[in-house]
Length: 91
Image (cartoon, rainbow, N blue to C red; front, top):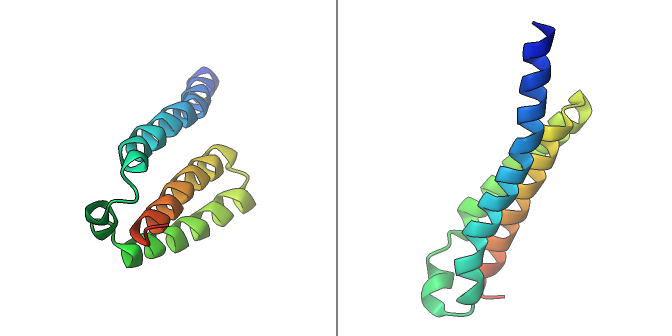
């Protein structure tokens, strides 16, 4: 059972790289066209603010629980939500 837990821990740590790739691949097409009105109108600022708030709560919970992989993952997706907020405001 100990070996299984180590394997899961390594896979969870490696998932940070996959999350980083997902955030990059999601942001990249929008970054190129972020100042276009159509792109800004397609972003729900309110929805992304809600996502950012919920993600922040989960990030703090992960940090206080000592779950650092979850904390880093939450921070990555909070950054994505923040980017969407900025894109939605045409900044």
